[in-house]
Figure 1 (cartoon, helix red, strand yellow):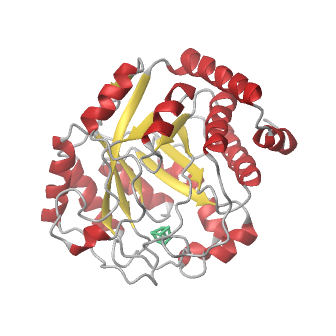
Figure 2: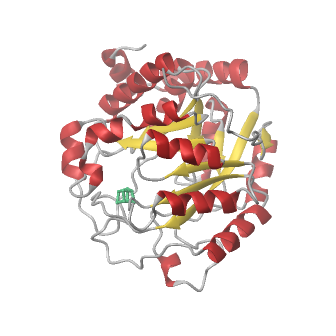
Length: 346
Ligand code: SF4
């Protein structure tokens, strides 16, 4: 594993030739280990109720936004709309409220999603092992959990109310997911919340430890950059396009088999440019509000969690991938009955 000093030196070096060398190494590793397949997914927000106060988030409990959670009928409307665009890999999201989005509610959404999508992932509040197991048996094959920042002091200042104030419980979440038998875990930090090299070093160390302890899990990394709330005056850290590109290169070189996700938070030209460096999964035609795909009459669709930067429709993303020599993949996983699936806990 790279040392902190080495990682910081790389991130501080903005010499053009050095960056091009790094990119060439990443491209070579990507071709050797991953081939040309890029999976496409879409997020679907089930609920924006949240008990936490993450000061950088548009869903935090202090925000005067319209709160909504999808009814069973609305879930089907949303899912049918996403599926009609060709998406077969769905990421279901909720805000962090056990009361408003209990596990039973999430499970009902998973059961609805099975009608439309062979692959179902979750980005919800941290759960216990038996709860993850229950959702795994219901059909979930992946979970996304971001630590947000590994800097404990910054974490404390940025998460000021609710269960999410518990840094350690969040840190231990990927291990609980691994123990449940769930196949894929996506990890990351929200870039800009703290000094980047420290956060990335801790993220890579966390991933390396998990890979050793739970080698049967497929891991992936995401590098979302903070999009500050309108009119907010947070003391955040700038993360340039070049820094993002270097992080993707580093992830590919240091973890050749780990997936790298790049969402529609990033502008189209950045996503196009980053693909050959080893990105394995991208979102397309995303909406980040509850009911954002089909309930356009609903006031809530004016309150997204964050603004989408790449608004290209799915068909355009497919053409872009093909023009760059990639194979767009909609279905890379099919569910089998999970009752007899192994558990990863040791
Ligand atoms: S980041 Fe998640 S937990 Fe924090 S306020 Fe937003 S929705 Fe709630």
